[in-house]
Image (cartoon, rainbow, N blue to C red; front, side, top):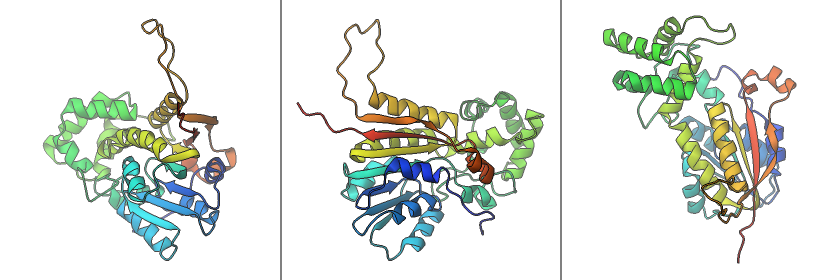
Length: 314
């Protein structure tokens, strides 16, 4: 399906500034999407620079392959960013990466394609998989999951206060007829949740929660945050853009844990030795008013930056 809106990369200039792109550096875009960030990084690379574009969505990989065919500086990989360490080792760039960018969450093209089932704005099959060729679809999960599990997912990942009521309504509805379409699920949720603020659809939090669960997004991010540090060279920059408080919390904690010793505890009167692996760069970065006006999907974006420190040898 053709994209209805032009894909606009979020926090493009701040991300480029944070990466401090060198013409001869090696850069990894772990979430290619539709290549806005990748193309901007490549434009700053010289003949000896290198870009690795990674995505688990086959549509994104096909787009990257078409766009960069013939450019020897670019390598395209179909993989989850959780596998970024393996990809780096396969390419012999482990510990040599000058900058790593993760723009986590669902991309605009995925949201805009009703056939992917991420959005309730247009009716489509209830899929939600970022890699539609593997794993379980949202429809299949909703058909088998217990009410308690559905409620937990919606509450934990969607921070939805009506999670129990919505889960009960889903279970009751599926007893009558399987839930196969996004419009069907959105209608069930809207009836269960009741009125919401005018600027938010009642199903927003539920769709978000189910998507995060189906794709294992938080566990994948945790893995990427750990292995991402290891692939960087000393001085290499780690830049993460997130769109959800749960994601940003993981990034914040992972960066701080690698940069600062754990807090003192009465149970541990002698602090364990600690060698920082990262240096925190600046504070949380948000889109400015101009970007929020021109790209509404940027409004919830948050960016954090850290720099790899050299290994300490005794």
